[in-house]
Length: 348
Image 1: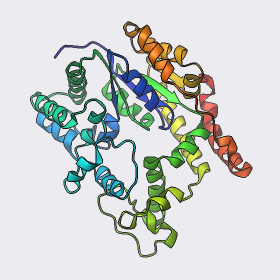
Image 2: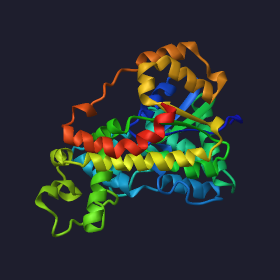
Image 3: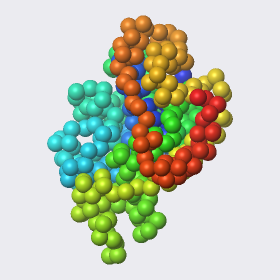
């Protein structure tokens, strides 16, 4: 172990806004450990106990999340969930016990042997003394950096804008990179993205029947479930039905506006010099300039011309698609996204 004086660095967004792309580009940097989906994988128990000893903290990191077990059932039926990075054929052994969350989402991106790294990390964490929660996380981040030969770490979780409050509370000196996107494009992308479709459909079930089908390993379908909804529940899940099920884009746009409004209020409580707002479309239009701005915000010592050229060359254009929607649907979506778009105008 080597000590580190870097400020914690978190990349936050509403999801479907380019944060994954940025995380992947940062992972190309020889000095940066780019952690992906760590807090997302641990949700909702990532900030449950404070202070805590090493063995208890490791138990918290290892406790299977019910949604991952539910995901496994749907993936067996053919659903593709990009965030679930552990090889499906090997993951099926966790059908009954549940998969440790870091194995499901974070460690497979760091090594070809996630099980071995998980075991090594567990031995280290369990040796830690009783301490504050954030110190344990910092030990984990630094251990992974040292183990994998990097000197700077950052963490990105999808739809993590809502985590700014606990992150800024537990890591008061943290820096934040907020990646945002045109809300109309977010809504269209979210409507096609399996985990977000699951969340939206789950909310529709919860409003109508009182419970969501994708948050627990088992789900009892209600007797009055409409015929066209039967392919959505785990026991009779049909991938084609799931992907064809029509979602209200304007409602997704309203939810996005609310996420942006609340998230920006949380970020306003962080000193301005520790927040960088990055527009996804700007990264596409001028990748070199934006990546240079990002890396200097992270740490001026990370300047690396070879990495900058490599990373900028990996960025590809992604033309907007929302304008191809029917005019009435487009108008409703624009209206729903207008509050969030107005909030973001000052950063564009």
